[in-house]
Length: 266
Length: 266
DNA sequence: ACACATTGTCCGAAATATCAGACAATAGCG
DNA sequence: CGCTATTGTCTGATATTTCGGACAATGTGT
Image (cartoon, rainbow over all chains, first blue to last red; front, side):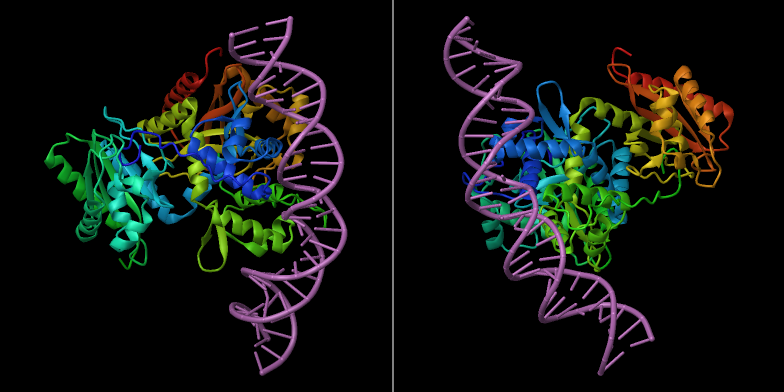
């Protein structure tokens, strides 16, 4: 999925209110949509209610309103709902409105076509890493990239760049201790991660191998905003056994394109 | 944009309530998002309030909540807001969850790459036509396709297929009389449109020239669901002077791919 | 400088949403 | 079949949201 992570990070959207605590409908809507995104699959209304800690009748009311608006839609025959067409339209409006983002999308398309590899646009969401957009390779090694899935930052090449503006202390406070444990049980020493962050900052790119996914090699380069800040990265996700010469070539391309997408002043 | 229409159809989302009529926050959210989608550009909060007929303080409250949730984001320096990153993530979840939709997206990609033309997935929204997804051509004749923009049905090749399940009477009642007037002032006779619908139903495809846009030729083929219903179409938007041989070739490809995307039972 | 318009926030009372629970219908299990 | 669980909807009173208006600050135009 993201910088090669292959597992769904199961975190319940458990920020439900104490029993009886009233919440505005709007806040319920927001929590419901977040929970559904985290779940990544259609859910029954009763389960949604349990998941977000809302009364069943309220949840039905909200879901029915969102169904009517096509922000949700019914899926299958067992009373499940998931995101609806309207979300796709809103999302398209978001991603195609902004000229910069459009350039990013075109770059993703071009790079995937030119190289036959998986290309991703990545960023942070809270204290987690996410893939924001992706063009999968058309080659035999297909990475299944889950846009929007939250992944622990230390698992990722991008993460090492995206925290470059933070001091060691700040990074330490930002990342939950449990996030240093990889999917296969290995643990990244925080000190090692901090020096990776420093190295990425100095080099202007970052590479990781077999962290989130034992079979992938990930490389990331920063896209800088007008103030020099890095809040998005451009990444390749490669088979771990990609020859070094090929990797060098791809890294050079990645850095060049990311630099091209960086805004003036950087 | 859609089946070649080149103008933004300015319709105010003027279904605001009578003054003083209380509305739930949720309903306000839905109306606000719809209005913003119709507007297609960032708006100031005061203007949104006017547009949807809501009190300014309520609108500020709602916008602030949606900003916090990243469903909206600030744009520029003049207090404008537009859709936010969370929408993109919700939309991606929608369009990549469903295996059928994923196949459609892949087909769009492939057809655009193979032909160098603009390919669209189209459908209805209420009594208007919209482009649901699109892959623009990489050639010199770039169609600017606005996914989500509502367009009068008689302006489009797809529209002639999407109403195929309706009787003449039903079509007549469904389409507002003003929708037969083209962007350049010409008027389509309803009787002519009805027979176009019948012909499209019989032929299993539809072609129009220079309707929504004087410079484009549009062809559409139906994607049938498991019950044989047509609620999506696959389209090409071509330069109006495309040679007939080329058009025949593209039409054959279009029909074949649309058939391939149609679900069993059709 | 002045006048007017807009922005973002705050306020309080009337309107009503939200909650917890109930009900009927349906589904699933032993 | 009986029992339990779940679903979708309905109910009414308390909690609180929504509305219209006000205020201070800022912006715009003459």
